[in-house]
Image (cartoon, rainbow, N blue to C red):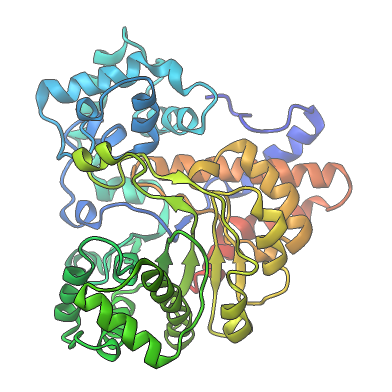
Length: 461
């Protein structure tokens, strides 16, 4: 890969970007939000083949291949690691359709992973697929490419996973004392959505995990609070939330108790379910003020857009689609109550690029509790990141940003994604130096903060 990739074309500005980037190129990776399976690290079992590493867990890859008519079953979506010939076939599909990834960040990440982790220099294609599969496979049998060895090699200082509140967290317990700090993240969405299938069964499991009676609203809230404490004891730093909207609106206790009782009885109407969820988001903020867990919010996703794919492959299979979202009015009740609370850190993410400068940056530019989450998911691409840099920092400043979030299930893409962010930040800051808006020393300090200091501060590390 070209050493100046993602840097400005102007030679003078490019030189500044090179110097800034080199100062943070090997800085530790802080990853406060992602979806790596902690079991993989706890058991440290070798990856079976390239498909299990690059294709099956990465919905960024599989959704693009699916858009060209390739069946998700052929790619092993939602399945255990594919066996033998099926795994090789899926890899061949990726390589023979390499052209689909032109101009996408997925191509950038894959090329970085292949070059930096496996020393692959050939471009994937139908002609090179088998040789690459065997080359990668041979390396995966070596101790140097087992999960924990790669974790150390990648320089990951902090890694947060995403976990169900009723999870026993035994894998995190097994990882205590590892060089990298691996912690769970409290993800309670399914417990706050009484209209969703399986809600009552999930709440019963929550009660068992918390050793609490969830037959009443008061017991249900106590169970959530107890499990948050368990997560804190296992090192958790944040609670993560994603719902259809960002509205957090409190109810009085009597109304909350009534809606909860109706939910348990199966008689709750859709508008009541929405009101209960919005009330519980307000409660989540209240709990964060009490226990200190950072509250991360990323609403505005239509989950499981294609019913047939959901039925065949389950959730998180590549067909979650963004919708428009609003924050200013939605969060006003929450921020009126908690926006200046010293214990609240609220990080707002979006996949609706229109709200970055219109809503998120102004909120972060006033409320000491609010931070602008960087572009992620559909927006973690160079174009969207450049737009974010130019608009949000002009309104809120660099100190109100979350720091980079990789948000990935594909383990080897973590360093590739962080490298892309460092290069883009270096390029942006180099432009400010060239325009005489910052001197180079200030730019270097800012870049170091964005890479390491800011995520440590925002996520209370």
